[in-house]
Length: 171
Image (cartoon, rainbow, N blue to C red; front, side):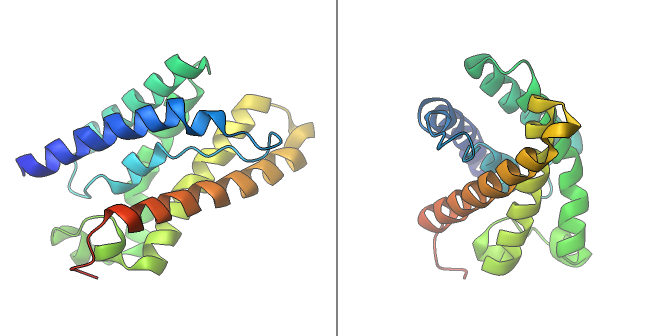
């Protein structure tokens, strides 16, 4: 258990640093904005108490906001997807799998389920974030275009990172 806590603390710090110093610099034409820090929320164990899931997601989003000057939008959207995460996982995983110590990830969920799980969380996050940034219905077409492109890029990056950093012994 302590090993898992340390692993998640390190993941929190590394993803925060990567988001601030690498991924926030990627802005291809204003349409591709990867938010890889969401990987932390995606990979937290299913047994994580809800209060800790919400608090850690808010903290991560808040720290991203501090370093990017985004006025709480990342904190709000990260907390919202953390709130929805148990419902999303319930749709994709049988209850018995979540209760038996299964961890989010390719090893335990399989590539198709993990990709869908990640894509749903990322899409909801991006839609809310980009809508809050614009806050105009007249921009809805542009928002949806940005959401689709950025969600695809972010999901792809998270899946690739998960494949790189996960062991293959349980696949």
